[in-house]
Image (tube, rainbow, N blue to C red; front, side, top):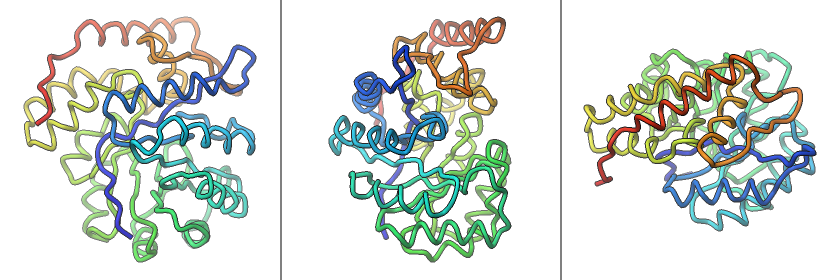
Length: 302
């Protein structure tokens, strides 16, 4: 299966009303704004989209609203993050019917599988959909490492086409390429190793902080594409204090607060998360305001 995914794919937020119901209009507004800013795709209901805080019916409705808002302007990949394989298959089938362009498939939640169980989960879900699949490796967040040998076993599944790599060890990009070559494209998945991932061959970047600073994220990617590493390094150094937020356990709250400071969304999150308070909230606001006040001058894309 050939897909042409590349570029910056923000993991978009799900917006909530004061009563914690989903604010579909505000969620669509966030999505539309990012597309208008020029992002190359959207990840709906990933970690930042609070997938596991949504009811099954809500997930379907959020995806329907996203398909409506985006209207095929860019690909929509939808987080497939369920407690077991059966639920993941059911969601994958529904996502395909609703109109997603691909799945971002996670290991089954809560349980830490053996390698054989992990591979079986990914294979079973991929088999039940014709959608292209991006696997998601994030050991710090989900306690499961998708190892090199597991990727070798999955590389010949026709619709498993991509891996979002969120391990902080950038050696993985080279090890993965050496293991499977171009059979599975790589995306950088952790904001504060994004530049390293792109330089080492990642085709794109699934980003959290793009929600607050899309133009700078796109400029960073464009600089790498045109091999302007001086510009890429300058943007990355400016961006890095915020990019580190993506590697913290309160990344969702921090990213949504950054969105709010930048006038792009609300900081409201669903329990068990709660909005940042006290010194941490003040720290993040100060970081965002400092970044906004010192934004780099951007070159136009080639």
